[in-house]
Amino acid sequence: LSSKGGTVLSRRSYRLASDTDKPKVTGIVNEKLLSDYLHHVFPASSKTGPASAAHRKTLMFQDLGAHLEKLLAEDNVTEDSRDQIEGCLGPSTVVLDHSSGFEGLLFVDDDLLGVIGHSNFSSIRATTCVYKGKWVYEVLISSQGLMQIGWCTLNCRFNQEEGVGDTPDSYAYDGNRVRKWNVTTTNYGKSWAAGDIVSCLIDLDEGTITFCLNGQSLGVAFSNIKTGPGVAYFPAISLSFKESVAFNFGSRPLRYPSHFNAYTYRFYVIPPTTDLIKANRLLGYLKTVLSTSIDTQVPTVECVASE
Image 1 (cartoon, rainbow, N blue to C red):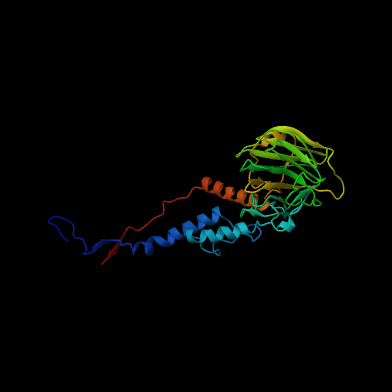
Image 2 (image 1 turned 90 degrees about the horizontal axis):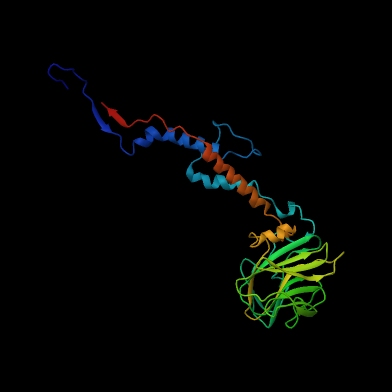
């Protein structure tokens, strides 16, 4: 082009870069930048050793899910490799024993923590027992009818007339009739209602069993309970037709923790080691994200020239 009294420019046409052109110009730089950032935030485990930047696989957002699963899988701890807590025997995940530890007809929830009676008087115990120390578990009362909640040994044999508290080595609290049971029965505690939380405490060092209602102690229910070699107690319940409860053996925090912590009662569950390790690692990733800055001032080409 020329202009009078001006400068002559070579003939050249210019056009804006199209969407298909831009990745060719800027994509390589941005992909490497993103991959380096993601590898920094989610580094390879020290077990496998860090890979050099030149040899490691490109990591993009679409690959991040599989990459995280691989990293977290390295932290898995098998049940067999975990130390058993002293004073406790059985699976680390404590649930209701729906395979052999029951009598009568019951409906057990999918999580194996909730149960509904479906016969005259049904009984069920947990999968894990205790023989030493102080322990506590909680029960949410979903209906306020006839139930006997407490502890029993493996030797207890129940039927549809006799349940927890009706045999020599079982002990129960009944908030419907406001009584305690161990073969014989006497007045004890307060009346419960739907929505209440019953806490069942056993002290195998002192030989006592105590119950609490909504965090308030009802006093020692039984003392001088049978202890010693070969004696271990399971959480257990007997309930009549259509009565229902939900147990908390440790999959959720205690609803009323302060009272029990003061008396050093242990929650009736082995801590979920693998889950805690994974949570700690994920928090570490988040901390790295928050503390890492990234230089986004990368030169990019916004137009393409052609002769």
